[in-house]
Image (tube, rainbow, N blue to C red; front, top):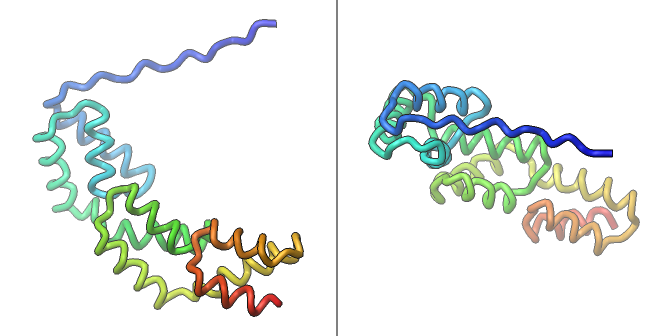
Length: 161
């Protein structure tokens, strides 16, 4: 029996100086989810737009407040912490990969630590994992892999015992 190969759609080739096409691409990317300034720059470069067009477009988007790294970092980190239950260390790493400046990452994490009880999230995950596996070392490793800080993990392990 032969398997049918899916045909890949050919990538659209853009005129590097076409500002309208760049705007349309940026609009599509932003509509899907918020983006950091550098992430948007990388995506548009990948599509073949010229540096001048990209920088002009990014300034325009910043002017209209469609991209803002501070707001992006906060919402991204908040969602990862509350919905995906990822710890601050993983969130920090992911924000770095998306091109967010280090000072914004640190400010965001400090703000979230003041707003959200990270210990409760770690405790909830740790307790559930421990009930399933009955092994404190595995639970500790699990929380570490989820990106929680060592001090938080130690408190969680102490409270689970």
